[in-house]
Image (cartoon, rainbow over all chains, first blue to last red; front, side, top):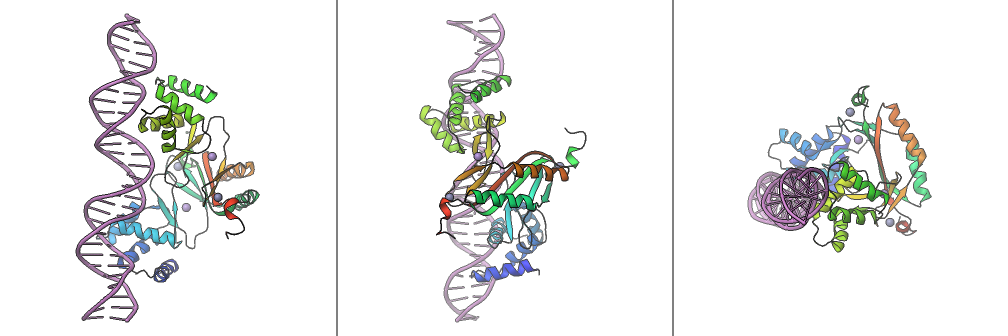
Amino acid sequence: MNRAAEYFTRFIKQKNLRMTKQREIVVRVFLGKEGHLGIDELYSLVKKKYPEIGYATVWRTLNLLKEAKIASEVSFTGKKRKYEHLFDHKHHDHLICLKCGRCIEIVNPKIEQLQEKLARQHGFKIRSHRLEIFGFCLRCSGDKNE
Amino acid sequence: MNRAAEYFTRFIKQKNLRMTKQREIVVRVFLGKEGHLGIDELYSLVKKKYPEIGYATVWRTLNLLKEAKIASEVSFTGKKRKYEHLFDHKHHDHLICLKCGRCIEIVNPKIEQLQEKLARQHGFKIRSHRLEIFGFCLRCSGDKNE
DNA sequence: ATTGTTATTGAAAATAGTTTTCAATAAGAA
DNA sequence: TTCTTATTGAAAACTATTTTCAATAACAAT
Ligand SMILES: [Mn+2]
Ligand SMILES: [Mn+2]
Ligand SMILES: [Zn+2]
Ligand SMILES: [Zn+2]
C-alpha cells in the first residue's frame, strides 16, 4: 500500500466516511495506472477484479480522489473527462497530438514564471492553470504530412 | 454589413450552401456581441428579432461560423461551450476568476515564443494552443479574501 | 414568373456523458 | 451483537449536444 493510498484512507476517516472494499479496489487500480484515465476505462479495469462493482461507485470514488487532491481532472476535447495522478506528481502541461491522440507531458519553469508575472500585473491571484498545445507529434508529422 | 459577415456569405456560397434569413440574423447578432457567448444566450438574443427560429438552427449556424473561422470555441468549465469572435481578432489567453466568472483577455508574446521553442524541442508541430489561468480577479480578492 | 432540385428549417427524438435517487446492504462505533 | 447511518448498484434523471424527418424555401434553370 503506497503513500497515496494511505493518504486516501486518512482522508476518508477524517471526513467520517467509511473505507469499503469497493473504494479500496478503485483506488488501488487508479494508482496502479499512470497516465490519463477515463471513467469508463477505470470502470472496466476495476470490473476485472470486482465484477459486481457499479459505475456510480467508480464515479463517486474518483470524485473523492479529486477532492483529496490525489487525482486531477484533465479534459482536452471537451468530451469525456480524464483523470491523472496528482499526489506526488509535479505540475506539468500537455502537448496533444491531433492525429494519434498521444500526449506529451512538459514542464517549463520560464513559462510558469511568466504566467505569475502576467497575473501579478493584472492583480490576479493564481490558483491553477492549464496550458494545452495541440498539433502533430514527431511520429505523426513525418516528412510526408505537411 | 461588416467584413466578417461578407466573408461568411462568401464561405456559404463557396460550399454551395444557401444564405437564409435565419443565417443572416444569427450571424449579425453573433457579430454584434463581443465577448464569450453561450449557445443558449445567442439563441435568446436571436429569438428577440426572429421568434420563430429554432435552437438547432442557431446551433448549426454557430458550427458553420466555427468552420469558417469566424467564431472559435472556448470552454473553461467543461460544461456549456462558449463562442468568441475569431475573424479580425488576435489570439489571446484567459485569466478566469473563480468567484465572479469574469474573464480577462491577455497576450504575452514571450510565452508564445517559449511555447514554440518547447514544441520544437519535442519535434511537435503546433496547430493551436490554449492557456487558461484560474484564480481570483482584483475585485474578488480584495484585502478581505485570503 | 414558373419550375425543379435539393439545402434548410424547426420540433422532437436521440445520443452522450454525468449525476442523482432509492431501497437494500454493510461499515464500524458502542 | 446491536445500532446508526454511510455506501452501494441499478435505474432514472439531468444537462448539453447532435441527429432525424417531413415540410419549406433558396436559387439555378427555364
Ligand atoms: Mn498529464
Ligand atoms: Mn476570449
Ligand atoms: Zn501523433
Ligand atoms: Zn472576480
